[in-house]
Image 1 (tube, rainbow, N blue to C red):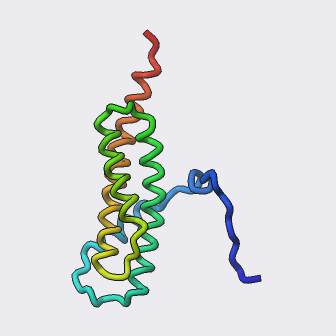
Image 2 (cartoon, rainbow, N blue to C red):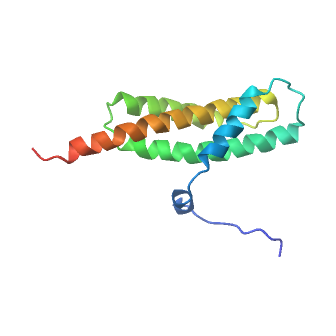
Image 3 (cartoon, one colour):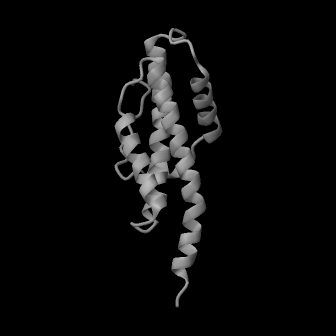
Length: 134
């Protein structure tokens, strides 16, 4: 036995039940954005940091999608969320083997968290107004 377990979760139930450690991911993003020496790490180390940020960003993007889907199609907050998600879909698959790459991932993660915060504030108000019967 190799010590690894392969998880098959096509419905994403595991992600929905496991909370993210937001404080840790925000701290990593803040540290990465403060780096200025491109030679500080080896390419493999940059890639590991990039993978950490990518995993967190994918999970936050899933939450952003969920909240945005609850808003009306013509709501500006939903449109902004879709723009941020489109940007994430383009950036997250890219490898990060240098400082510039991991800093882009850190910026993307911060943008996703910012959008999530705005949507979390907006969605309860939208749900309350739509659930009231005339």
